[in-house]
Amino acid sequence: MQLLTFVTQETEVSKLRLLVLAAISGIANSLLLVILNEAAAELENGEVEIQLLLQYLLTFILFIFTQRTAQREAVIAVEQAMQKVRIRLADKVRQSELRTIEQLGNISHYTPLTQSANTISQAAMYLLTGFESLLVLLFSSLYLLWLSPSSFAVAMVLITLTILLLVRHYRISFRELSEASRKEGQFFERFSTMLKGFKQIKASRRESDEIFRELTQLANETSELKSRSNARLLEDILLSNMAFYLLLLIVVFLLPNLIPVHEENLFQVIATILFMMEPVYTVSSAIPNISKTNVSISSLYKLEATLDKAHNDPATDTTISPKLENFHTLGLQSASFTYTNTDGQPLFQAGPFQMQCQRGEMLFITGRNGSGKSTFLKLLTGLYHTDNADCVQVDGENLQAADYPAYRELFSIVFSDFHLFDRLYGLVDVSDDEINGWLSKLDLAHKTRFENGTFTQTDLSTGQRKRLAFIAAVVQHRPLLVLDEFAADQDPAFRQRFYEEILPELRAQGQTIIAVSHDDRYFHLADRVLHMETGQLQGYTP
Image (cartoon, rainbow, N blue to C red):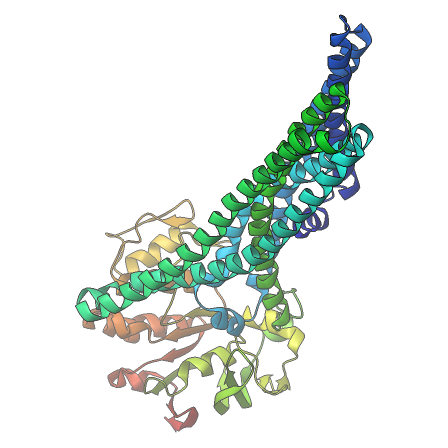
């Protein structure tokens, strides 16, 4: 049972303790039936012993106590397990390589962190009540065997057939719900795509209609799969009721004509069968919900397995050594990167790149879209690992795999597809005054202020938001600043001031600047200009 394994593996809760509590609860529940039957038999004789009343009360208290304790511990254990898994997966995501996250891509791969969590959180009750009901059914069956072996034989045949059918339905439901979960992820992926590309589809009715048809198809397919599964749940409940009503028919109307049965035993047999209906109903209701939970757990572990298979950082130490911090040159030596599909088959290769950068240098890189500039920057900054080792060099020495986390700490980066977080994380010894000073320098002081770790206003134009990202990069005070087409969204006046005043000021402060730029009118301000063409650096212009 994946749910029970999930709870016990991810928390300190004892699987044996939960099972023992549920077992005691189930046994106590069954004993209530025996005591009631004994009391009913004595009532026919005119009186009921006080001893039976005390036994009933004590058994009832034991039943309530163990059931409440087991359910409470199970609910807490499930929530603790989900908390642990969420934190673990978040940690593995942040330690994954950039290419791994790029290949996972859309948000649908991460829906198990939300959808699965909700399903699993609600599953503890189904697990315990299902297990407890099975025990009640077992002990009630043994009690029925003692009362009437023939009724027990008939009951076992019907119950066995019912359970076999329920198990078969469980397997079908598991497959259908897994497929429904996959299609649901695709739906959210397409929906997210629609929101990101809203401007385009708003201007094109055909494109809008095509995306909507795809969303509709995915929603319909998901609905059909879930509807079949839920309809099967109702059928299972109906099947359980049919089995017991058929059992009552046989015991009351047929068996007495075939096998002599004492009248008092017949009433006790009927009471026992009626008592057994509830646990079978509970089990038949729990199976589909446990099936959904198993699908959710499988999705969580599948996501984790995907992250584990990827090459993650071999070291978590990001302390910059004096050797790295005081570098004189760094660059790439015959570095290349091969893009692969999900099966690991190569698609195309960028590079090999040959480049050395001097400390304090201002270097511009130009080239057409798709020429390999972004791949080059990701290799240079250590966000991509090169195909072969010993291709990233610092002061002529090869960078080792374990050095990558610390090496990346040398760079502040503003990519063309930058993301502006809702607050500035990880800043050390940076005052609000310094950031607000940069806001004034970048003509943003009238738009926003920096207070309590965040900008007061970020609903700005793309160019203005990119300036905020630039500030977030600059105030990290790292030795290298990498800018990927930063000036592309800026107005001409600011663009001129950016190239002629801001970048030279940063270089004068000792910052090494590597900028992708197409503004050839400012190329003379750079120490070197490199040109990228079809994944190759073609040389430089002084």
